[in-house]
Length: 113
Length: 113
Image (cartoon, rainbow over all chains, first blue to last red; front, top):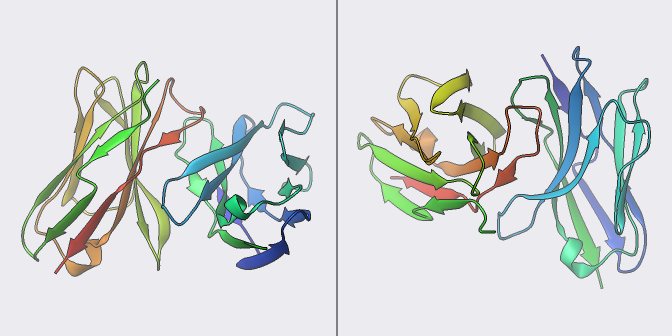
């Protein structure tokens, strides 16, 4: 079984500042993907960033980057230059082998003006 | 390219009724997954279809069923609705069998009275 733990239920950050969301996971799969999805108040689930476990290089997408520590089973998301539009629920997600997506409980991020 | 579409967006039913939700995946995507999202349980996997075959099924009662058509469109059906079935139902599609990035539709908000 795969599990995902997000230890920060809520976080807030000032506009233009940097924030890091934490995530730890557990899996017995050797081939797996990790994702961060965000769900704004509109409830649309949007892919933020993807990391393949076999890649050592941390994924980046514009202002979003991850710190993937495979041995520690840690997968944190860093948001730089936070914008009001980043306000959302952020889900850390794992998908191993042919398995379904397994979601963490989510971190509610609020960006304050 | 058009995204994942779900119909209807909102639905109100009464206990004991049945409901059918529809999902059209991104063009070229052959895999469709369904998730139930509730405040208490978070996001839970319902089932996944690839090329008209159910590949994975979550831990839901038999009242929840689904199918996929030859054009990759998918439907899920819930019979004998219960109050606890009130939720946001999300559909996601991906091009290949897992692991692969899933792209989500806007969801169907089901309210059972």
